Structure formats: C-alpha cells, structure tokens
Image 1 (tube, one colour):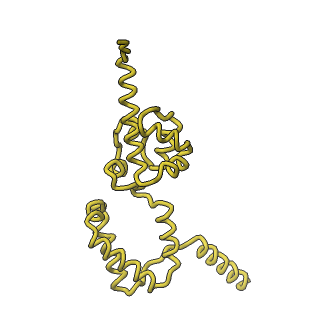
Image 2 (cartoon, helix red, strand yellow; image 1 turned 180 degrees about the horizontal axis):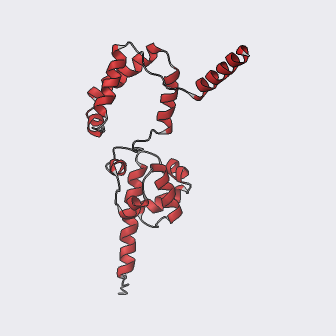
Image 3 (spheres, one colour; image 1 turned 60 degrees about the vertical axis):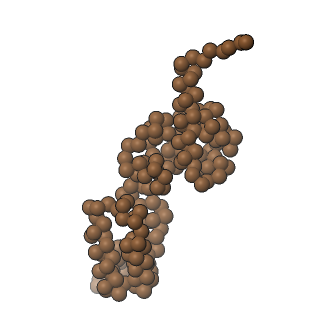
Length: 187
C-alpha cells in the first residue's frame, strides 16, 4: 500500500482554505453563487472552489469581497472582526455601514426632504411604530442617540409632520439666484 505523507504546512493550508471558504459562504448569504461571483468579479466555478476550500482566493478577490461588505480582510483571512458593524455581519445580522448612511439611506433622506408634511408624518409614524415593535432594532440602536432620535420623531408627530428641513443644493442655488436678482433690482 502506497501511503502519501502530507506535510504540516500542506495540512495547515487546507485547513485555512476551508475556513476562508466557510466565511465567504457565510457572507454570500442568500445570494446565488452566480450573483455573488458577478458582484466580486470571479467566475461561479472559482467561487465554488473558494467556498469548498479547494482553492484560496488571491488578495485581490479577498479585497473585492471586503469592499462589497465594508469589512477588513482579517474577517475573511483569519476570522477576526475589528468593529461592531463587522461583528454584526459575522453574526448574520446583515451588512451595516456604521454611523454613515448608505447610498440607499441617503436617497431616502433626499426624497423625504422634498416630500410634503403629510408624507413626512406617515413616514415618521411608520418608523416610530416599527422601532417600538422591533426588538432587533432596539438591541442594535446606539444608546447614545436613540432617545434623542425618538424624541425628535415624536415631536414631528406632535407637529403634524412639520419639521426642520435641510438646505439642498438646489434650494441654495435658488436663494443665491433670487438674492442676485434683488441686488440687481436695487441698482
């Protein structure tokens, strides 16, 4: 019987490959292999090999995955999380962007700024009711700001949707244009 001896280094590489593969598979979540592979710029077959530990992704692929999930490569390579958002991802709670709004959240904010008070009131009521009923949201809420945030939302409800509106670039341009016209009229 011909027995092949595997070196400690080879065994360690196989172990690391499987661990990296499990973390990549975990991050993929419900996405299909094809969708995830396209997202990170690899073939579906390559992704399948990474997930099973047959091959280890190169640094470029690891970096692309990390960019997609806003995590450090230590999570994929060594299973180490460096901050609360990464910890949330590693626990399967979902990708979070820390304190910075995501592009989707910015879109909601921008459109809400342009909405009438009835729409703002409906949205604020819905947000408040959802938060009160959502235990996960309560656990994830930043205790240093959530009380103030909820107080502001309740004040908007008390004012029937009236709220402080931020100045948009378009509004600022209109103000400057109107001031220019008025200045010209004074001359």
